[in-house]
Amino acid sequence: MEQIIILGAGIMQGPAIRIAKELGFFTIVADGSVAAPHIGLADQFAHIDLKDKEGIEAFARSLPSLGGIMTAGTDFSATVAWVAERLGLPGIPYEAALNASDKARMRACFDKAGLPSPPYTTITNTNSSPTPHPPLPTPFPIVIKPVDNMGGRGCRRVDTMEEFHEAAADALRFSRSGRAIVEAFMPGPEFSVDAIVYHGEIIICGLADRHIYFPPYFIEMGHTMPSYFPPAQQEAILAAFCAGVHALGLAGTDSIGAAKGDIKLTPNGPMLGEIAARLSGGYMSGWTYPYASGVEPTRAAILAAMGRKPEGLTPLKNWTSAERAFISIPGTVKKISVCTTNQHEPTQTIKNMFFRVQEGDKVNFPENNVSKCGNIISAAPDAATAITAAETAARSILIHLDPTDQETAAFLFPIHPQVFPPDAFQLDIELKKALDSLPFASFANSAPLCENIPVIAFPAFTASNLTDYMGRTVAESLQAVRELTGLSLPEITEETLKLADNNSRFLGKSFWAALVRGGYQGAVYYIEGNHCINP
Image (tube, one colour):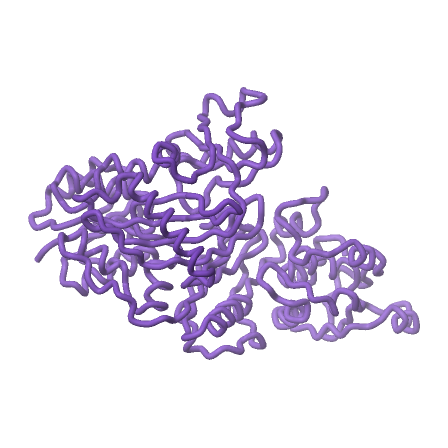
């Protein structure tokens, strides 16, 4: 039986492992972690650091019937190319893989080919901090990121020299080689492209709209497949991507592999973000494109890696698949549940729910794309149904935080105002004034709250059309608070309160401030942890 090595045994490599076995290949996975979740799907596991290309080469040479090697959704396409080149297996040149793995080399290739790419420079551990005014490729804003990492780790927008030094240190910390790239910020929407490369031919396997939020970071809160942008703009984006693939040397006549691109549509047209020599992670190649088109690019990539012609890439249907993420404010997960009043979509439309956290885990507001709490994937014949289903399902996931974790308290009631993370609800000046005018709570810290403790009404807020990080309305957020605390939380006016006796107990300004700052999580934490914070 022919053998194939797949680098990585994580969630993103699950489809590749499954499909390789379905195709009848003896499937061997290599991973640096013995706890990788999909080790058990493979026929054999090799515990090898994926950065150790020589170690993986030595292991590959020990296999009697090895026909190919591949990866999807990892940083290690250069390791794949190294082994393939030295063992004479189907693949891309190692130097081309380095071009697609090192962002500084990548930009140099794009510049040499005259392709639309932002001005850039590189910094290292030895020259980022000591220089008070380092030479920048362009005026602010700029973007700093490691030259050799993925998932948005260490990547952020920078608008001032003060921010530059902090961002540079962060980017260099995430770089395996101790180098970071500084480049001009590219405004405009972002897109992801997947493709199979086979003997010079570039076969496009999907163009998706990416949904990026929370500056100065670039957090992808989901993507929608296929793109809903006009055909002419899509064609221009794909033309830029294909030119970039050629410029990196990934599409030579002997090259066999895959390519994944992130392209920006700026006011001046498409500009090349990044192109990797692999299929995408982020659930695109393994989930949303197959759901939307009926085609599995992973199957084609495996066939190509094994020296077969990649067939079956003609779309069989034209559905929409939407992926949406869910996130948390800082703290420790006490429980994860589903809001029972926020499930209005047919369950068959939801295809997958991926949870990246569990009870007891520490969570933070995301500063990269690997620190989100989970993802929802939907599919439907029409875009509206797929998008609504994914977003509704994502809003239904409730992450209940431990009320004793002081990181949550520090987030909700910071000593100094914070720009990032942003408030869950963005109040205008008038709403802030209305919040400030509310009375503080009245209850004994040591006494438990009764089920029907009232809340001072904040009608200007509850009647607004504001939504939180996930698109929850104020009403939906309050309902989530009621579900998690078991309190009915009736709203009363200040006039009603004045007529009550002086011993009346109620929630007031700080409750609403916690809801504004941290959404339903903040309000629940405030109620359950009121004994350890100032009410």
